[in-house]
Image 1 (cartoon, rainbow, N blue to C red):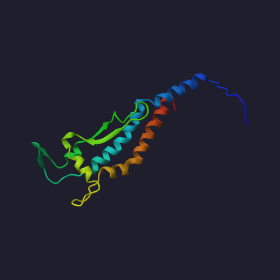
Image 2: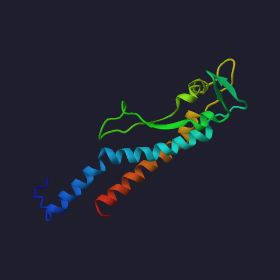
Image 3: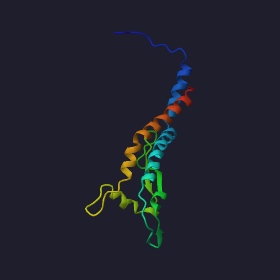
Image 4: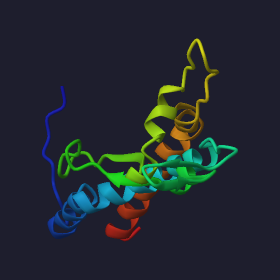
Length: 148
């Protein structure tokens, strides 16, 4: 069993690095990293969103082909986020494209309609790239804050 002393030759430099690492774990950096990954999923959902073949009316508003795609949003979810620990973003749609929730139900199809999956396949196709992007942002911040 080794017994020995730990000697810190430059305590100011060590304190500086610890301070920098605390900044990396800050709410701001976590949100930057999370949104960078979430943007990849968001873009893939927009590409895969179903586009109808005709316009239709609902509550006096015309719904046009591609309206769902045009109204997909990336939104910060304050309720599911925990400051300094977890930043949660949702890929969702605006209230003008409320019918997106009905299409979401068609992810698996029904006895009357074929499946029209777009949310789950978009997530599955980009989840690793999103995780990689998250890591890239964290790595970049560590290098910035610790001077390399």
